[in-house]
Amino acid sequence: MGFKKEMPPINIGADISVKSFEMISEELKSYPKAREFSSEELAVIERLIHTTTCFNEILENISFSKDALQNIKALLQDKAKIIVDVNMIKVGLSEFYLKTYQNEVICYINEPFTYEMAEKNKTTRSYAAVVEAIKRHRDEKMVFVCGNAPTFIYAVINTLLEENIDLKNVALLLFPVGFVNVVESKSYAKRFSDEFDVPSVIMKGRFGSSTMGVATLHAIYKLIKDYDGTKKYNGK
Image (cartoon, rainbow, N blue to C red):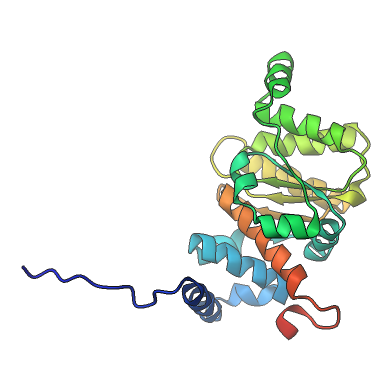
């Protein structure tokens, strides 16, 4: 029998993670596009690449509004609610970070009132869920994270405007994936972000996923944790 069992070349979880990011950082040097981003934006990009292994797709489609990460960090540090489109994002987020910064994750997608509102108003549950979330938390800071349902994006923007929410207290992390309404919803969000100066990180095009939303939040939390008030990211 010619087959022989093998063990992984690197077999310790922490070592695997470190090696992965070393490889990503080194490979990014061969992409001219990477030079267009700040050190903090690259920290988010590296985390997204780590999650997907996709270099070109991330670099060519990621969009950061001006000072987006600085503003999102401030919102999270000020106990912002994290309002998400699916429970997959909710269960994927680090309990350590959520407890440290006292960020409650809100997802009303499976609540009975969401089913009722969606049926009554002829919308998706994702649309109905975020309408209710904004109304209930209108006076609090809110970070909206979408990884699956583009109708969530339309609901966020329309309800924020209809309810006259203070847009200085909100931010958008948008990564829906798919074919129907996806490209259009992201374009709508980009125009909204530009028009009203709302902090946003948007993955343009069809590309995206809930795990990318989680990865982006974790990257931003790590930027908060690693920042000592006097140095830039990682001391650079």
